[in-house]
Amino acid sequence: MATLILVRHGRSTANTAGLLAGWTPGVGLDERGAAQAAGLPDRLAGVELAAVVSSPLQRCLETLQPLLDARPGLDVRTDERIGECHYGDWSGRKLAELAGEPLMEVVQRHPSAAVFPGGESMRAMQARAVEAVRDWNARVEEEHGEDAAFLMCSHGDIIKSLVADALGMHLDLFQRIHADPCSVTVIRYTRLSPFVLRLGDTGDLGGSAPRGGGGGGAGVVGGGAGAP
Image 1 (tube, helix red, strand yellow):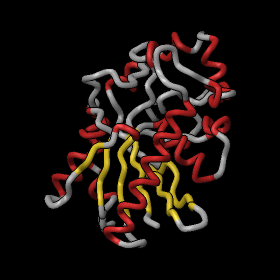
Image 2 (cartoon, one colour; image 1 turned 180 degrees about the vertical axis):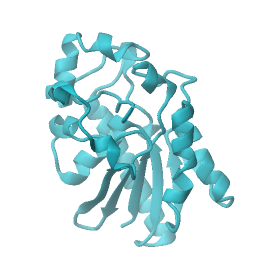
Image 3 (cartoon, helix red, strand yellow; image 1 turned 135 degrees about the horizontal axis):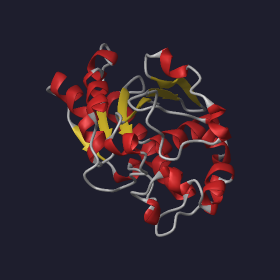
Image 4 (tube, helix red, strand yellow; image 1 turned 60 degrees about the vertical axis):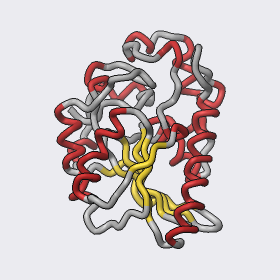
């Protein structure tokens, strides 16, 4: 089967404001996010892409634009199934404020049971994303062969849930996975097993340095803003 290159969108204005954007319209890249996106063509140089698929949200489409500009024959197709989690009433709220909500502990410790008020469950989020990957895998392989590679630009929680699926991890463990803005994750799918070849690769090991406080043992809902 095909190889999937997952790109998280570049740093957004919501990331730097500490907001859980969800499907809030008008959330684009900030200055750093635009610079991250501008570096994407060089990072993917030498990788032939059979297809490019994106979340329909602005921050993902903006992330892909430099790549599309560098490869004029490349088109992007959108798929709502790899769009951000529908956070419902949580959308647009401050993450610091949401930290005090009782549901946040469920999101952290038992995400397979988490349902966002007015939104969707994390199980439903993962299921639709995995379905999208399987569908695109089959399509790319049929049209371009099993050695083809395709790219999906999506969001932190979506990417983490896809990695968990590829690793055979229960969704309740997916908060242990991290994907910084504009990071690249690569999953090679075969008939019997997927293999995670890259995870959250930004090309910058400085982002791995301790950031203080130990993180409190909590995953960042929505993915976080990355290294300062």
